[in-house]
Amino acid sequence: MARHLITSAIPYINGIKHLGNLVGSQLPADLFARYQRARGNEVMFICATDEHGTPAELAAAKAGQPVAEYCAEMHEVQAEIAKGFRLSFDHFGRSSSEQNQKLTQHFAGVLAERGLIREVSETQMYSHADGRFLPDRYIEGTCPNCGFDSARGDQCDNCTKQLDPVDLINPHSTISGSTDLEMRETKHLYLCQSKMKDTLDAWIDSKTDWPILTTSIAKKWLHDGDGLQDRGITRDLDWGVPVKKGDEDWPGMEGKVFYVWFDAPIEYIACAQEWVDAGKGTDWERWWRTDKGADDVTYTQFMGKDNVPFHTLSFPATILGSEEPWKLVDYIKSFNYLNYEGGQFSTSRGRGVFMDQALAILPSDYWRWWLLSHAPESSDAEFTWENFQTAVNKDLADVLGNFVSRVTKFCRSKFSEAVPAGGTETAREEQLRADLAAKLAEYQTHMDTIEVRKAAASLRAIWVLGNEYLQEVAPWATFKEDPDQAAMQIRTALNLIPLYGVLSAPFIPDAAAVMLESMGAEGTDWPSDIAAATTALEAGHAFTVPENLFRKITDDERAEWQERFSGKRD
Image 1 (tube, rainbow, N blue to C red):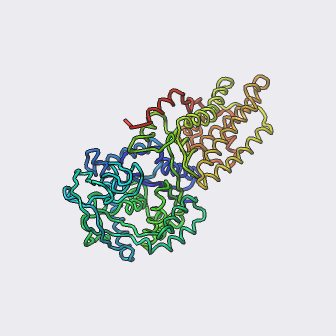
Image 2 (cartoon, one colour):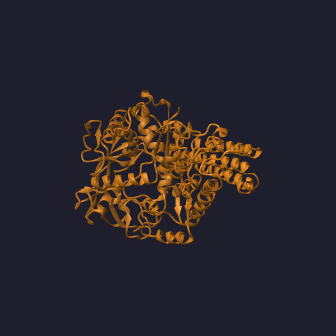
Image 3 (tube, rainbow, N blue to C red):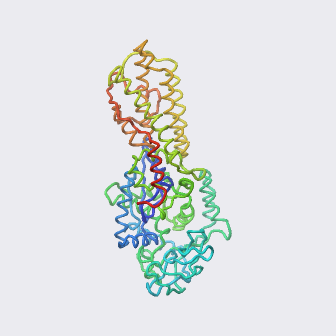
């Protein structure tokens, strides 16, 4: 039995996410976790909310809440949405946890001992009215490039130009609105990534099976321009992990916190500690420490391409630089962006479908199927309501749902709600099993290599084989001449339903559960022998006719949703 550690990129706490965020990390990670569990492997699938940094503070201020209170509330909201999408986390943690605070401070202390953290004096915008240094996003002004009057201190959202606060015309504090700002000297800690460049380069080179998207981004950061640069790991903020050197205070760093992208990846490890402390498991170290048994774990990370630099360079620099026996990632599955109706999803503008809204109009399986079968693997993908309607109606309603409905209803009307006896199998049934075995092998290969769209296409092809068989043997016609032979054909088709349930569960778990329950086959294992799997339901085995697995999306619904989600969310 193999052991799989699976993490999906930790989502920011600053609001409910749109569907593009879901397909970029959590959903394909859940697909892979469900598949590995179905194959009988041991899995730990963990995620958390990323609760530190400027986005959390700004969102809390906008909501009129203390940041700690806001983060606690949003963690619960995001946890409920995750349940709604059937994300099967073993634990959904919080980067603000005590476990993560202590582990982050531990890593900082060890890295300092190894000579991999240096102190840097730099200038930063200071607000006299607020009595604090301002992070770039706390400063707004007029863009010197395009004249947009709400450009931030790090970037103009209008023309996308990268900026420094001193570039802005008439800058002001977004906290108080004060223009009484000045550049003032402050000290920060930097992770000496440049010292790790050769080590990281060799490590990336050893990952010959990684997606090109992942390795190309890592190589760009390693070699473009002046190469891999040291990175600041502290900030002048009130909310975050206090800067300490292990358990000791860090002179000169009083009142500072660690940068969110230093502590957030460390939460992957801390989350496993939270899992144990929550009473959900024991011995987290066997998943994370190679001196405690983690050397036989396969660790896979899922993320959008914007997170790749932190997971291929910064976090590995932390792990490798510590020289402690922590588990390094084995495979990083990264995704391109999902766009929306000819443009981009926009959280700030409320453009697109957000996770809570999606679940309010259709069950999770509809969204899971479309998002996974259109996952942006080789290039950016685009969500359109027309494409969504077509995929749901054809793949889910016509191919899978219609097959299950036709077979069970025909059997009930002509025989009973039990698998019928009689008839003799022919070469056509033998061919069906051969075709199923070939497609199953293809499906498993794509799932093993995490080729999500190809896996979805193979699964759909398995569903199609049942429809093609039904159309060709036409039991409704056979019944008129030879009821016994029609019984055999229907018996064969009925046996495909639990097979479809097991194979479909990683993609559409709710519909899969209905298929298995209706056929009285809840304990069905992943098939190792197609012949056995397609004869498991013997004559006399009782079943019930399920309600339609999927309904079709009407043209009126599609038009209404297209209009509703074109602009600002309610």
